[in-house]
Length: 164
Image (cartoon, rainbow, N blue to C red; front, side, top):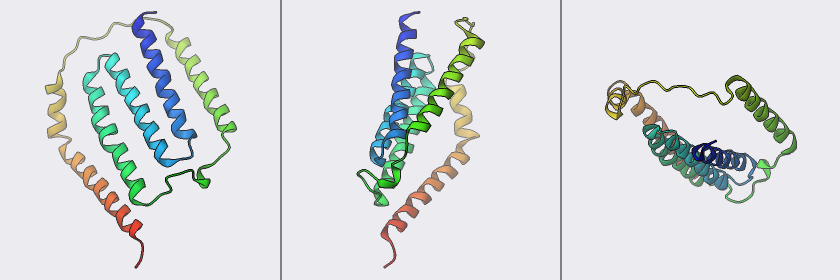
């Protein structure tokens, strides 16, 4: 095992722990902030694996847009900031199922792949070849999704104001 393997495992454990905190907390704003930690750890994983474009896309799209939109929606709808009684739940059965599924997947991958090294294909692309289709083919769907998210945010403001 190399140092990079240990670093990948450590950051992966941080991501899993933050993901667990997202699910386990009974405060909506704290769940959003733990989601920031989890998605940031995933971006670090991509950086460690050499996928810089995917890492920065993760930071810009998920951390920069989705989580901010989530937190704004929570704050604009006047959702409870503190502990919420309807978010309290029994965590025992869910943790048993989650740990069981995680161990099963880990065992499956360890048996299927082990520590086999695979040769990576030669890189045929760069940011220009990846970015070209994004700004030509996928520009319209991106704008449609952004208008949809803007409509959802405006709807949240209207719902939070209530009837007069």
